[in-house]
Image (cartoon, rainbow, N blue to C red; front, side, top):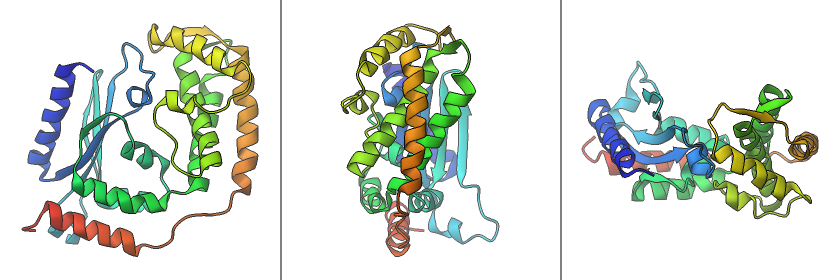
Length: 260
């Protein structure tokens, strides 16, 4: 990562804190740069979790629970309020577990580490598998049906499918990095096909179109069918205990805003 970009992101997060009167608990890279297959012109997808002073959560006119700070050709920066975040953790939101485990961290601290220790207990295998299945199915139907396709979309399809395979086997959040997901046992020939397409993608413009890869097309089609059947049979494993999250929420507010 360019040092100038990292410094700009860190400075922007400080500006967010000052202008919005919040504390940023955790800020990471999301998307292709975190997954390890960014193209030369990929933007920076910065996601952060923030907390407001305790009195703000007692307002009759509730504040927005997201901060949409910047969106341009280089930076995409937005954040979620801690209350929204913990509610989504309880629902087993797989995207949040990716943010928590991102290999590219711009800001974090002990308050977040303690929160995440609690949130880990709310990972849902069924919710995560359905999330990744739905993401992969949408990408396949929307972007991979023509004779020529953007190779970028293969990885936006393969990554969730491989993540779901990992979760089904190990019953825990999948690694964020694509290379780690590739360490799984894969069908014959799939690894070579992925490497071939990845080499083209990394050297290409994001929107460049290339001929379909037959092996990848067939794997994606069959894997979507297989994963739908497996997901339907998984038991509901959502953690319904709110008390631990309530306590984590209150403690984070007290730590970050000791004077209220």
